[in-house]
Image (cartoon, rainbow, N blue to C red; front, side, top):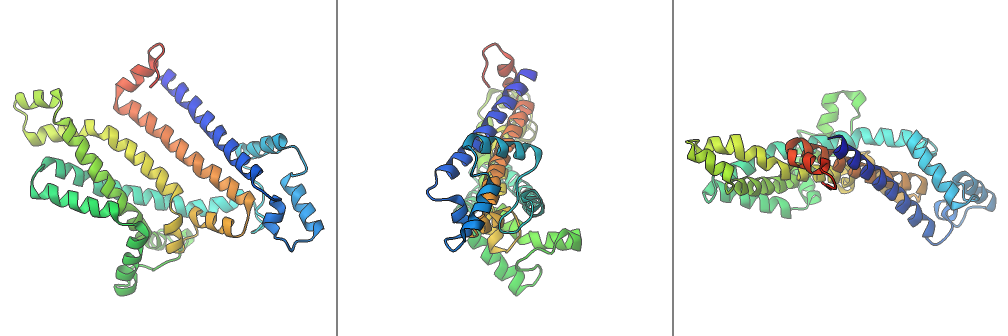
Length: 322
């Protein structure tokens, strides 16, 4: 296990450093003066010079990169040119919306998709299986922004159970805040639940063809008992991979949903930073979102090792590369 962990940690650090290099280089090779891009062509020379100094554009690129990475490590992310506040505080305020939203959506997707996938596999070839497959196909094909609009029309406009948009804030109480996140979470969760249902169904059906399931059945275990006791636990390995990818998507891919529901999250901040040409905020957000994806992938690898001892053994073996 230590060898496995060291290799994964080394890969995590290398990937994060690679992400910072890519983001920095892309912004460096963009045509034009970054200060002029941020302030616009109407800015006077003194203001442009002050911003160039603030951004360190008068220093070598290598020095600016090292200072930026050091700031990322220490939490000093710079100051937003648009909002005039530290980027770290700005990100902290917005992640208090995006992270709970992603966690709620992932929980809903898992609570709905995994049981439906198991039910479909247990009733393979029967009407229940066909119904789950049909619903999953619709869910995969349905854009989440279109689903969000339908949910707003039904639950916010017609039934008036929840607000159509905006965020009440955690200071208004957990109940009000969760009501504000209810429709966005459902809009994000349903398409992901459809994917989970299909993956779970395929993984469980694949387990029924393995020797350990046939042996369990030959010893007198019922189909249901073999399903719950043997097939489902072993089928969780590919499901965990999909869950990790989905959480990464929900963290980094909520831009459309947050704008549909007017939520002050990271996704909306990305759009605002692009519209307002706030490159300081934008490059930090891109790295943080990429880092979230890398960290979640690392945690998925650890979950893999916990669920499947063969992964740990392969990594511990001489020359092993799990």
